[in-house]
Image (cartoon, rainbow, N blue to C red; front, side, top):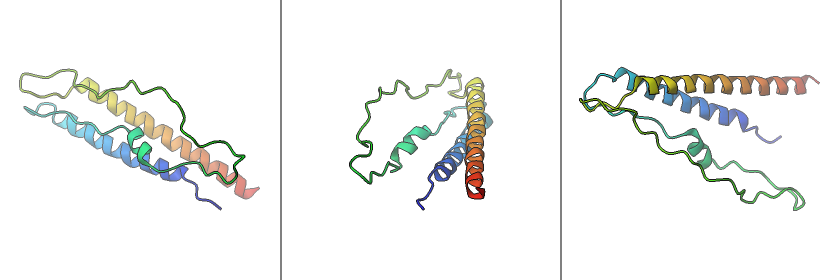
Length: 126
């Protein structure tokens, strides 16, 4: 039986989400610190792109694993919404939005793993 990588990817994303939540919490904790520059982690997509997961072709009649032409990403690095006179670049509104994104991503990750685990249990019982 070949390994199932979904659990590995979900675990990587959970670690990334923990790091992002800690970064957001640090930004919020330093919202009044003069000269503090807000930080964020690289997007999870960058980490996933560095992972060497690919399809295995066991027969030349299988589908191609060649490059796929996808449109270029239009996202750019997030600039701080405001800079106070003290040089602090933390925007509480922006940080709260990031915290909400982390919460939704945790929920999605957990629900996907639960559903996949249930599918495995059903297939084993059958």
